[in-house]
Length: 168
Image 1 (cartoon, rainbow, N blue to C red):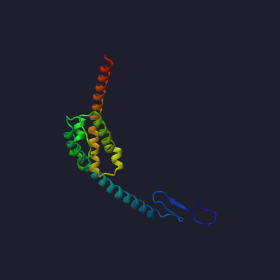
Image 2: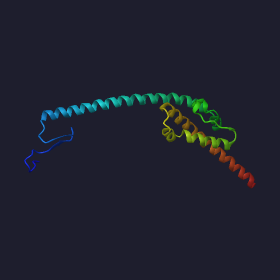
Image 3: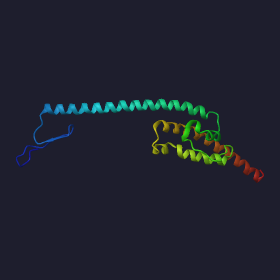
Image 4: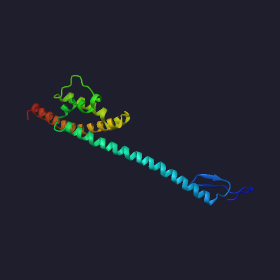
């Protein structure tokens, strides 16, 4: 690539991103490439070690929190769980004024409010600490199937009431 004005050709080496007007020395280019590769290995190795330790810590935290949340939710109905959120969420648990765990309307309202706050997408945007986010996600996962069972039970009750009202 000689230019027509008498200057030496322009060289660009993609691996090192070095530009120059003179032909690069092969030995200097090999040294530059190996130095770039070594810098990349050091950076990637450090990041991978850091990520691995963070992931291991989060997995351990998730396992511990899962035991607590599973014990809290086992064999209990949705109303009782909503009434006792402070046991797992501590001071982050929402307070419900005049909440009656036996009233299906109150239970539905309370669940919707809690689900809005504990949904994993909302928790990420709230910038909670990773351990708090893990606990919130586990509580949400424990409450969701309970709410589905609650909805089915409530629908059965409504159907029975409609049948009674229709005289069937």
